[in-house]
Length: 203
Image (cartoon, rainbow, N blue to C red; front, side, top):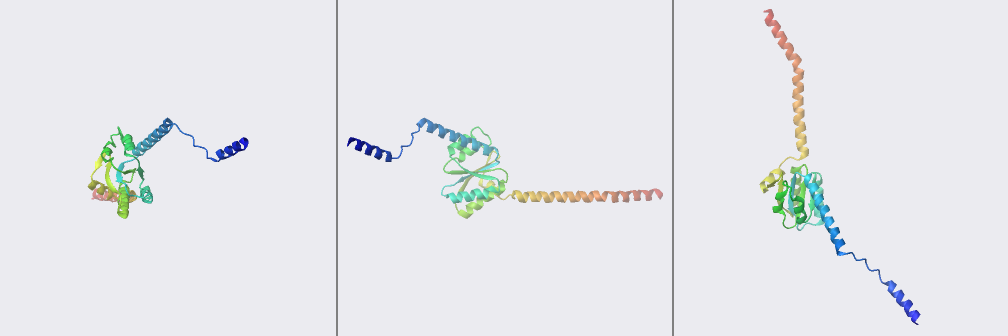
């Protein structure tokens, strides 16, 4: 009987799932700290490549809406980054270009970091806000200076990068055409001058 009971107990015990291995608190804290440091390093790298940062209150936005905003920003070299304010503080610490972001680091923030087409990116943000009727712009920093709401609107009124490049190309073509015409006119103009000089000499 004892052998039967022992075999039955062994069988029942084997049916229980294996307990997960316990990780030490020290190991978990170490990995968390490492992850935070990686995030701070990533943010610093993004800021180094950015010309402007726009801070949005993303409270109430769904995952789908955040994805929509990121898609709209892709064409303007804008990146939407959601991170804790404490990590952003560490990222801007000691950086004179971004120190003034500190005053905006309250509440739930999404940070739009813009590399080149600042006008197009701000337009994309405002269009998204109009379509969703969500998310407010808390502020923006451009070239180390906090912008007022009116200045942010002015930036949104700037032509997009594509339009600007087209205008520049058109202006260059216009100047090139004028130069070409002037060059073509040089021989005939010189001939007229020589003829006039010759006629004066004969008289």
